[in-house]
Image (tube, rainbow, N blue to C red; front, side, top):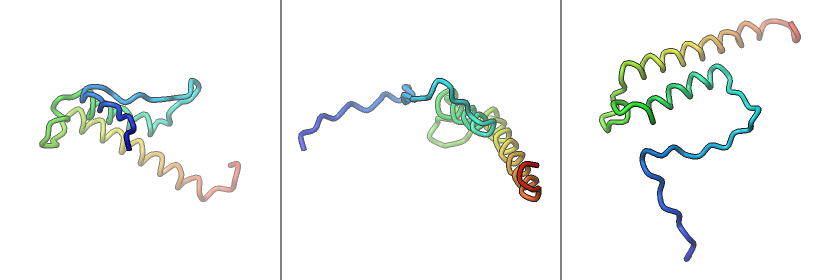
Length: 85
């Protein structure tokens, strides 16, 4: 009950990430990371309470969706081919 409670991080501080040195994000994950980094950390317009993203955020989101759709299409195309093809 009397456990120590660490203070909340400040609003401008990003959470600490633990990432393996040899790890690499997929293209889809990288596109999402660029969108999130911009929307949550880099752009004051996107962080406003009204929730309206800026044009750059909308473009980053469109790039993410295009990357995701390309990945889905590639999976769908490979689903019909025999393994190893």
